[in-house]
Length: 233
Image (cartoon, rainbow, N blue to C red):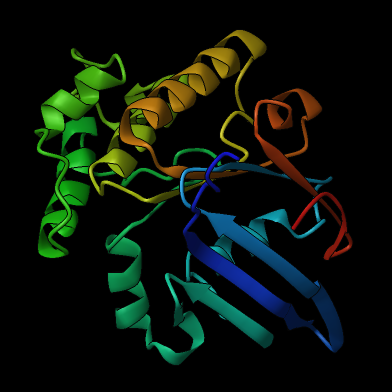
């Protein structure tokens, strides 16, 4: 009999709901969502625009709080932490690649990565690689002095990946990382994400509406109208 493989739960949502007011109308962004993220796994959140994928990523990353239910990061309830403590929790293991890269516009590519490395150092999470080495790792050796406006969409996403690696993440959250890219560039960015995951062994949660992108992941969860409608949780 083979030994059971031990897994460690990094993040979990339990009965999570998110509601907000739009004018006088209450909008339900998520409703009664249960989800568990284990160390080292790859998970795709599938669904059309407005299905709740981004809201769920924001919850997992502590960027927003649930209206009901609980979100845990490594056993700690994020709802019990103030904004500063949630930021510290993110710096201590959660990295985010936003749709469109979301780089700091007045900083160069190198400075964007260096700023993330500085935050990671404060949280005592260093990769042992210098910011220039991280840029080289994503194939941008000659782009350190470029501002975000001087980068292509694919280059911007690669800087965002280098920035996320500066935090030595245990969990990488990617929101439609190829949504604004042509198919060739998108494929290269995805190949890079998977290659980096092999090297750094982080868990990956990726939001996408593209079945081909989702198929790369070990597990898929489908959302519609703020609810999980398919896939193991």
